[in-house]
Image (tube, rainbow, N blue to C red; front, side, top):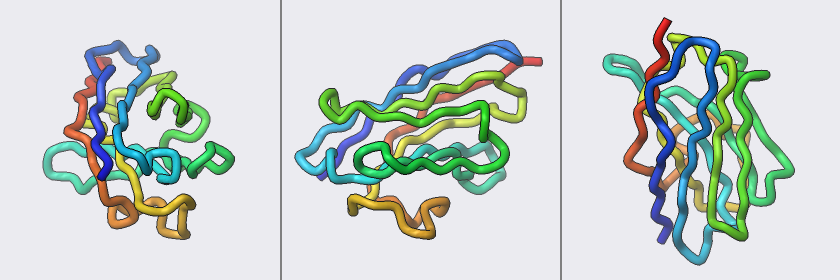
Length: 127
């Protein structure tokens, strides 16, 4: 079993930065590929970033590439999302997620890839 709790969301001005954290528990954490997704009302959950078990492979959509960085510290059971150059369109509830395998498949950008989800943390970017 994997349990995830996000933190670090808040209100920030456009162009600012935030770092989201996801605390994970469970014996299998070090073997889980993980990701970040975001969602706004009336919109489907959107892929933000993914990382394999040891951080050797990461993926980002064009919408955040160059601005966001996903990382993990397995010794501390932590997943992070560093967000720089924030834009109003980044406003959303951000969720961390964990898969059940060590590696990311070709469907790493789909929510179906992941089994465990946190409760979400709100990020609001003002113009």
